[in-house]
Length: 482
Image (cartoon, rainbow, N blue to C red; front, side):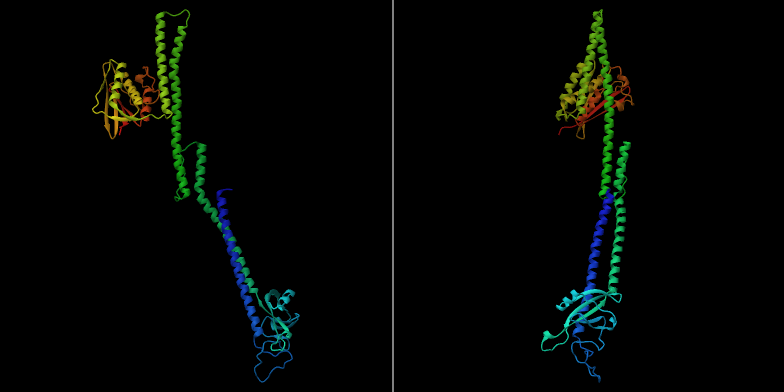
């Protein structure tokens, strides 16, 4: 069962129970009030009839003449023909025989059940309903002594008086009240179900849109879709906003993952290509050395030198791949305050041994300290110096400069080589990428990639500026110590 249907049924059930309880209480209260009022009136009417003055003579007593007032005694009988004064009134003897009735009961008798007769004779009042003259009546029966003042009160006979009241109109009113309550409650429940269904649908519409969006994303594998929500910032609105924010994060993560997978595929393909070339050369050289008859000694020496060079190239390539693998795995570098001057001097001394025919100029204006890792930064500077020396002609100069601004230190390596073409600058830090100028070199295309990852691991940045024919400037920026 859907949430919408459950919510609608929940609202409707609560309203139905509330209306039923209210209607039941109202109807019961009105019914009790109506019948209690009628019963009180009947009891009062019976008391007036029993205790009131007798306006007519008792049976066998001659009617007074001369206009004199009748004797003021309690009622003890009826008119000579058995007719009582008033309406809906009847008397019975103690054995239940009817002794008198009012004119409106001519030919009719107010009933009294055996149980009621016993209750009345015991001194209690008795109420019952009956259909008389095709209309419902509420009948009250009460016993009383016919005469007073006798010698023995116990010997005085008891007479039962019955008074009735038509309750047809009251029952009709209660019937209409009951009908109105039933119809009104039914209409209210149906209307509440329809309104609850509409409101639940309106409240859950953003959730349906979220569901549709999620299904569309699953089918299209596109995280660019968003949930459109223009309603209030309630719980459902916040859910839509949160879902959109989650989609944005997923889209960013998915694009990063796609980029990582593409980079990984390119990395594997390029690594396979780079490893295949020296391995093929080594295998070919081994086959030459195994020839029978053996090749000449001079040619064998050249092959061995070539094989040693290819093996060294494999070792460098594997070491560089290991460095990249460690960085990609998120291995954190230990960072500490590091003076730049002694480190750069050490790097320059090592670089000069690699290219004695080129000069390296370093003259720092200030001695700065940065927060970094000594080994990682040294490897970065050696990579940049090696790259600058490779692309600098013999007798030329490579410059290293240090500056500070905004709490960060900048280390720049400038060469006077051929420079980098503008279309190659965006790719210069990509793995295994080598520009046309360096295609003939022995590099692997991993040096600048390693430098960038190591700089990033130290919370730094690396950038390049280059012009064809004028050289290039690589700048590494790192946070200063303190």
